[in-house]
Length: 112
View 1 (cartoon, one colour):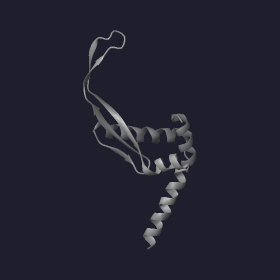
View 2 (tube, helix red, strand yellow):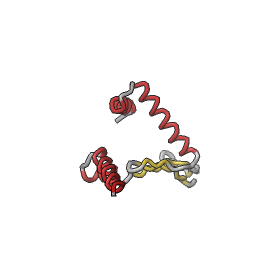
View 3 (cartoon, one colour):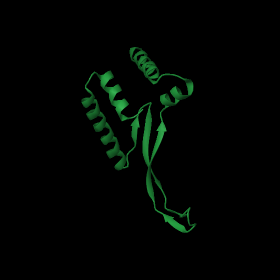
View 4 (tube, one colour):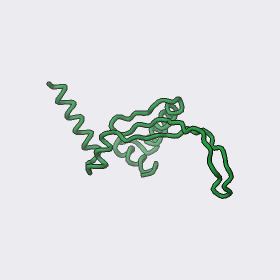
């Protein structure tokens, strides 16, 4: 799925224009990027956790010449699947069904 497909799906499910869906995604992604830049984790419950990890500087070799080189420290994004996403991928379930089950369980707990 690419950004265009995501915009189409959001527009259809939210019953908004593609332009509005694109603007919503811009806002969401910008906020996520800003949080990561500040060193914060981005946690989307049941789906995904994004965090920044630092790869320490190290010595390496130029693959063409074999010459030793210094590889600088670098920040990298680390992604971890949430429990429901992991269940969906490994048990052939739809994510929407798992979310609905969670909502129904929450409703039962509230009524008790």
